[in-house]
Image 1 (tube, rainbow, N blue to C red):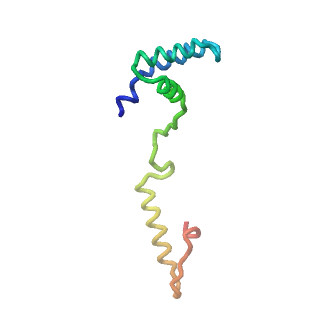
Image 2 (image 1 turned 135 degrees about the vertical axis):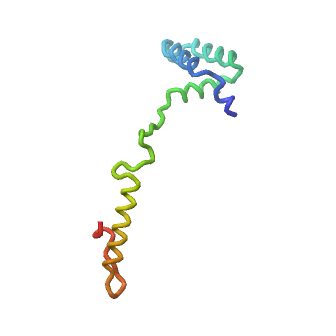
Image 3 (image 1 turned 45 degrees about the horizontal axis):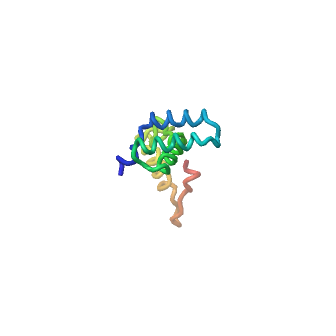
Length: 105
């Protein structure tokens, strides 16, 4: 299925998009351009339209540190969590109640 998705090279799609942008919206030449491209690559006209819509579709971008905490490295974060857990255990009263996490932080 991946070979079907890449049937039209992206540079060909960009060139087709540029040619279509130069033509008026209701021009019959637009349909001729689409049909010629579909015939060239052996695909349907609908597939060419679908590929044109996907070319300029915005995609999400990830940060260079994607998946990593911004503030603390994992080792420091783990140490910090251990300190909070120890503080909560040390502040347990006779009823078994302990300091809230918010106050411990």
